[in-house]
Length: 500
Image (cartoon, rainbow, N blue to C red; front, side, top):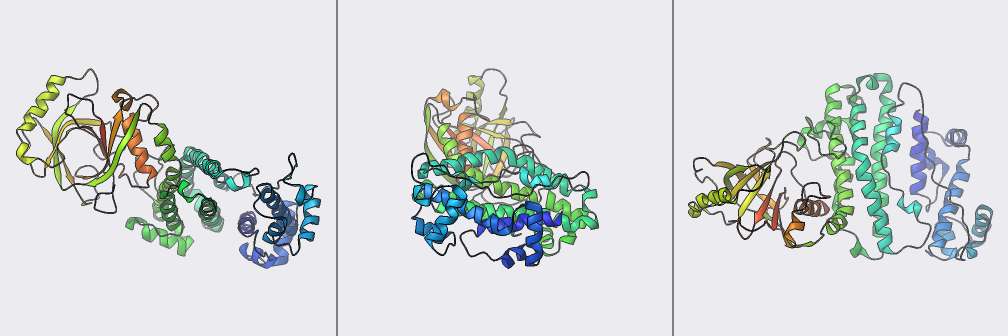
């Protein structure tokens, strides 16, 4: 089993260096073996010699490059380490059955030799752990390109992959958590095998995927097509993958695992690494947020930065996002009354709420609109229903009138507890167009304004403090008698200043 994992690691090394000089000893070193022994095992397992595999992959990619017109025959020959164009042409003809110069011709057919992946299927023992690696939605976008594409089409391929990954990966991360917490899988005799699975089979493969994604995106001739938030998302993910978690409660456990994997014999260490299941969308409430949860969030961050801008744009049907900014306000107190969504609105009662709050005009906060505040008391949406409160933001410490409730907000993180006080940091989205379309629920997770505001935030790589400090609000810019046309969404900004 260890050998199969080592061969997979060696194959990934080969794939990353097909345009470089490749020596058998360098490849075998990746598999922690001697050159002759590794080549013998590689041939037994794959049915092809190491040299044949490298040659097949290079010629396959060379054919793709010629079809995409990414260089002359000589340039591509040099790229894939052929000494002369003549030797390249002979090898190319033996592999593809046509000359390199004939590739651009309409109707010319090329062979494609896909990268090998060693799949493991055994009965009992470790059989549940290895398939997990291949259940992730890994990107193979560059391998799919066999025809010339525009930058827009190339980027769309990345978006399509990221959408598929977001739909699949949360469940696989949950399965990974289950495996780490399965005590019988973590006996002394299984540690070495499990280290290969987790460190080389999962973490190293995510690092490789990130590197390939960077290369692919940077190669686009129109750099403006790439959402800039992608680069920061990749940086954050790569940092986590090397063990540099920014959660102080997890740092020691993660550092210990990277330094000495035998610490994973400890149930408590594995709990801190595994965390809790987060459900098929990755948003369920968790008792313990572990290292695997951090990786899942980072994986989602990359995907959101890729596909959310397009999703947010497509969701604006009959209305438009006119203005969007991030704001941090001073400490303030929201004062209002709880409302219930069931049944028709009672405008008379709503007017009575704001008439009473007019008496507190001396305590205005500076953000003086009629507000419908929505929150879950710091719990996940799967654990606590949404509560709505009609009211206004007033100065911190304002006395609460009889019959009213209050929720406090502070500009900086002050406590790790769940629920109020919330952060007075938020995104402000202002919409124009058909107000009925803005409040539509058809095809949206919550409502149109909610979805577009949230997805814009996710597409920009800004943190939503879900669930512990999560809140949203509808804003009635023209008073409660008119429909709400603006939305607030809680965020946790790294900078303590307005971001336009």
